[in-house]
Length: 285
Image (tube, rainbow, N blue to C red; front, side, top):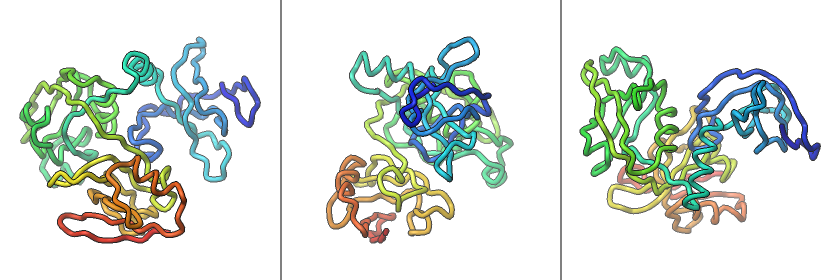
């Protein structure tokens, strides 16, 4: 159901093509329902219903190289939307849990390199100091394979499920460490950062995902969490784990400040970036 091109109460039909879609660079947190029901501009925010008339999702986006529907649409699951709506009503904001780790998708290459007999789950690349995960004893190199006794297929799924859990909640994580299963209980911290697909801020940043972050010395900036191979962001020279601290000679400490600086849509964007201990400039057009 939706309002495409101003045509109110438009209904289309289709099937559920897939669940748990992520890695689309549409939002910072992604756990979409994929459907081939026709979704066009103006459908966003409309209802995705099952055959019983029950709400199962909120239409959000389409994959449309030519601008129109090609039968690949995405919706936010209704249980996620309900959780967020309840928090907005109760607190006036969304309170996201924070696990306190950095990670990546488990893959056959990682499994081979670390001699791990697991190819699904979330590989822990770093544990943030003083976080709930650090206090629970999670270590770099662990593989998280379940959350509250439910299997995990990817790091994106872990992020999504943790982000819709309130701070202070205790979660049970199933790990694989040195080839052996291990269960730990983690108390979630409160996430104070925001995240976004960089393309939504500036087209020249397409392919990168950003979040509010900071350097080891506490300097605030915008962390580049992921960069798609061969994307405009990658071709411009941006790397994962770079931290943006300035734009066009203006200091920026958050995604909100970055958006404000780029509201004027400058023809050339000069990013000041910290890469390790080195400060460099990257020009985008």
